[in-house]
Each structure stands twice: as structure tokens, then as C-alpha cells.
Length: 452
Image (cartoon, rainbow, N blue to C red; front, side):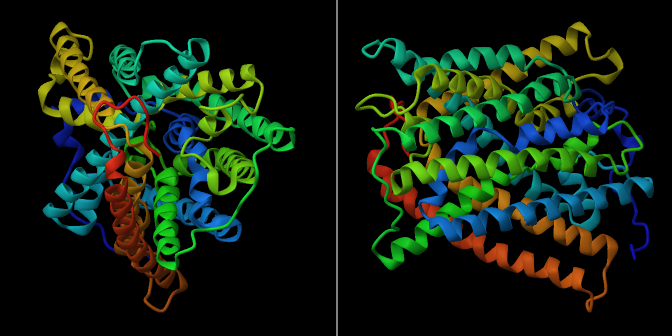
């Protein structure tokens, strides 16, 4: 049974001057809009990294980890939805992860812990989205002009300019049509990539397949935990309460429907991309399977037009992903700086929004150009960021809210998940940072290549 109502530390009456709530997190959405947002937040081009994650795990452990991570994340988001619904019924509607955690756990320190982790995750994904979009442009450019003079950082600059323009959509809710298109794009490029992998694997130029793991037992262990961290990052979504906030009240039950929509797309895309890519390339899988299909040396392993369309679809979806994960930064920036009384489209607020969001996108674009180390950074972010927010806090918040008896199965499932993923997070962080250090000699600021 749920515990007694708690004192609301963040009452809605205190949001009258909160432009982040009134503007960015405007509550007008339906459940299918939440499904679009969730799908964009989780199902992105990072799924093309799954064959790379499998190469550190092998077939059996790869399938096991992917399935367990899917079940646990769905369960985690489901529990979070129940907590959000319960709080809303008690008159304590929460629209931010940091406020929800601080309210239920009764800790001002938790507020700052969550905001730090969440900001790091969202900014990291924003940087990664710009980096990958720049790489997509570079891939298309290299196919058309192999000896062209343009460098990766120049494509990143182009992407940043587009992101600056798109970032002016004032509210999370205003992205609903973009995110529906994003959902369709994810299905589209997954279908194209799977088809390309099947073509590559059955052609006369099919690469030799080797599914063996590293010879050293210690290296295998570290690689496995790095892969687990990557899978955690791919499933991760540190903005669930903010997506819930976009739902028109009463929001009860709507997020769960959105979750089912999202995980239907996940089942289709994640398994097909992982299996087809690893089947063809085995332990030679690249951190971006498109680069494996379009090797630097030799012909493309699939029809150029198929890969070209897939790259365009990936590029377009990356803009949507960058926008979704920027919303927390936008609401933080505008929470106090914008003036609610003057309206969302007043001259003062429009100019302020233009300046702040432009500066944020320039910041992300600069770091994307300076630090093109996507594979390693993805693993570190997964271990340090997503695991606490997605595999530990939701279970803790549920146990604190609903107070299941210590003898109940639910209580022990939640505690077990927290313990196991705390250990996995620590090991994943250590192994990911270790790989980052080992790859340090490959890193070059403003490099023209993304390091795997």
C-alpha cells in the first residue's frame, strides 16, 4: 500500500513565475505524444552500436544482456510512471526528475545530485547527436567526393547551425510532430540497415566471420562490462518525468500507454540491428555499423543508394534526438530568466530564448568537434549516468512511495536490481574509463575521424 501523503516541497502554486514549467514543459500532450517523445529518447542511431556491444559479449551473453536490460528498463520506467501517477493523485504533480527525487527521498542533496547527473547525460547526448550528425554528413560527402577538402569539424559546424534554428521550438510539446517523424525514421533506417547486412552477409564480398572474444580473461571481463555499459546507455532515458510533464492533466495511466508504444518499436529495431550486424561482422563490428558496411578500403558491402538513404534517415533523426535531450537544459535556463507574465512569444522572451539556446548549441557543437570519441564516451555516460537514474532511483522511489512489505517479492526484486546494477555500474565505469585511457593515444583534438 502507498505510504501517507508527504508535504509537497515543490507545490504547483510556486510555479506561477516558473517559465521552465509554463513554457518548455507546457502540459498539453496525449499519451501517443508521450510515446513519440519516449521513442525518440530511446530508439536512436545508437542502436547501430549494438553489434559493437555484442562483440564484447558474444551471442549468448549478448542476447541475455540485451533482453534483461530491456525487461529491467521497462519495469523501471513502469514503476516511475506509477510513482508519478500516485503523486499527481495526491495533489503533488511533479514535472522534473530532480524535484520528484528530492520530494520523495526528503533530501535537498538528492535534488542537486539528480540535476548534475541529468544535465551531464543530456548534454552528453546533445554533443553525441551533433557529432554523429556531422559524421553522417561526412560519410555522404566522402561518397560523393572522396578527396574533398572538408573536415569533420566543418560538418559539425553545419549541423550546429541547423540545431540552433530548430532549438527555437519553444516547448517540448511542440516537438510532437517532429518526434513522430523520428519514430518512422528509426523504423526506416533499421529496415534498410538490416537489409544491407543481409545483402553483405550473403554476397561474394562477405567478410570472414569470427565471433571469438579476446584471448585474455581480464580483457574479456573488461570488454563485457564496457558492452553492458553501452547497452545501458542505449536503453537509457533520464528525462521520463519531464516527458510525463508534457501530458495534459490528469496524466494518470497515459505514460504507461506511451511506454508500450515505445517498447514495441524497441523490440523491432534493437534485436534486428544487433543480430544482423553482429552476424555479418562478428568481432570486427564497428561502433557505427554503417561504417562497417562502407569500409574505408574496398567497395561498399551493400547498394550505395540503400546506405545513402539510411544515412539521411539517421541524420534527420539525430536532429530530433538533440532537441529532445536539450529540453532539460532549456527549462533550467528559462526557469528564472524568462518572464511568464509577458508571454511565451513576447519580444523579451523570444530574444532571450534565441540567445540562451544559441549559446547552448554552440557549446555542444564545439565539444563535439573537439572530442570526437563517441564509442568510449557513450560507455562512460552509460555507466556513470544512466545506471543510477534508470536502474537504481526508480526502484528506490517506488519502495519509498508504495512501501511494499519487506517480505514481498516486489520489494526484493527492486532491492536486487539496485544492488546488481550498482555493482554493474561501478564495474562498467571502471572498464569504460580504462578503455578511454587505453585509447588515449588515438585521440586527437578536432580529429577528422571518430574514434571507436
